[in-house]
Image 1: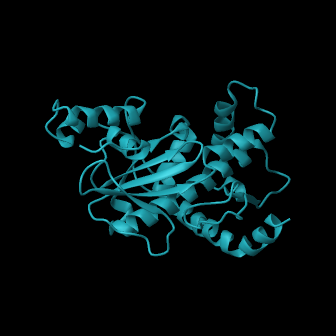
Image 2: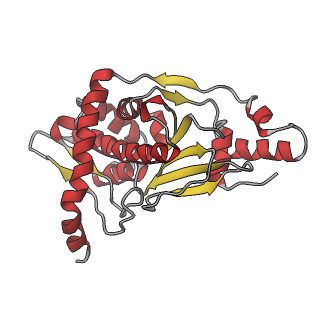
Length: 269
């Protein structure tokens, strides 16, 4: 039985080894993992395809560099580094702002970007700032911008798999899953029920399941994963907000193309 690095072990800890469910992890960085039954590659090299921990299984892994890191940057920028409830405070402020942050859009390319641009010279941007905007608008724009970037990752992975974006389930993982407003933003932007899994340290759980199969405790990974508690539906998407976010996501996508050359010039100093 093969071993596994962190990402496929984490996927197995959630019971993910077959198509139909994606894992969206918003931690410091952001990753979308989607299992594949056939080895394929993105001809534009916008994301990666790796061997899964099971024989004859693979997974697409699309990633962004500054997911939760973008919110941490905002926390520190606002002087909240030493505030123990800083993230809860930012979530509360964001929840008081309507979808779209009243016209503010954030591009989370604070450290360059991986999927889909593979552009080390990309930079972070707030667009649409006005005098009326405050902490909640910035926090919500960051959450929405990161989620738009994650949705781009999800769409590319599903396109490679030949799947329909509306038909896939998404398990939310990482620190963003602890924020009620960010969970709702994810459900609405992905336009799918957002699943939440029980327990913690899922990569360790996946490694233990693999060890159990290797030692003969379980006959197969299917048998081992069947013992995991099922993921529950955490948040349902709102149709009106999903339609709004589909339009805002198109604007988000267009902004990078419009600003790329200026980003590169400014990045060069």
